[in-house]
Length: 229
Length: 229
Image (cartoon, rainbow over all chains, first blue to last red):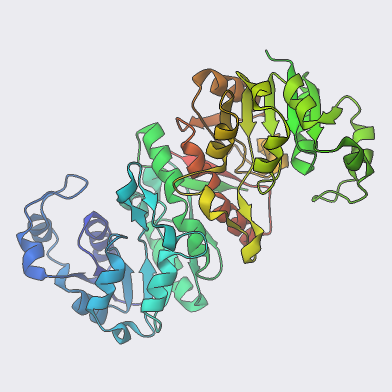
């Protein structure tokens, strides 16, 4: 079992996944653009949690470093950078650092520039996806799309949806997909459908518009999609 | 209860919905571009069913007429025309015929021009939808998006998925949505989420890419999406 996991990003998704991975016995390094700035943040996170420094005091087993530190330390990397920032952020470390490593991409190409609910970035949907662009930026990595279709608390505890929803994985490396499925099992996912190659990320990312509307209609973000079959 | 339903289109979706509506006690007129040509078709339908003329012999209670006949006869109209043909087909009758009527749109803007699985027509997604374009073409109608997220046999019998999946509705007229929900209940749908105005169709139509990939991965088209919550 891979024991070191690097997490790119320090937002609420990273803050939710990191402690879960620690609980599961992994060594976790969380990476940010600028460590000093991240520790100086005074804003609460999106879910109303404490500023990063406070969160880090409560989660001291999670190491903090640069994107490069996180990418280097991890055998598996979780990309938890916000969709609109990820492609630029990935330029901040040498792509070769992650050669041969599994990169779990859980980001979504949300576009907040055209009103609410957000739409998706037109160049990153339909005949393309954010995951495929990440794979292009990190050609030696095995990018696996997963987890992007639920909120972060459901990601690490699918039962929080109130049932046993389905998770999808998509990626070009069967071996890397098995690694990711293993972690998904550890998170509690029992119904996982392998969509095949990374092209499947198109389908997964394009679920965001229905996710956003179900959230709006039910006023409840703790849900999942079950493929009834 | 509305007793007359007009169906636009004569393909497998129309051929599946029409007999179900007859069974439920509705009078049904199915509309086509050219009645003579449709009756002369020798091809089997997409699901391997008989050519239209044979189907019609087995379903004599379903009247056949032009798009205009179907649109005029129905208190409620089902749009079952293929996504790539619908906007042109709707020019073949006077939009005013359907003023004040409920139009249930179950089509998807599939684009087969860029390989398989099909993508979606770029101009009809994300910040637009086929349903919204249909509403523009039929400004006096109450367009309601429904049923487009499952195969046609599951549409009229959700239990055929093997469970109790969720159906969504979206549209600008609450009254028309109630009419459609009533028919969905008669089809067997018990878990219906109202996504709000017709903008919700964007989310529903953008589920096609994941539908197609789940179908490809499981080799099973008899499934539905359950919102586990």
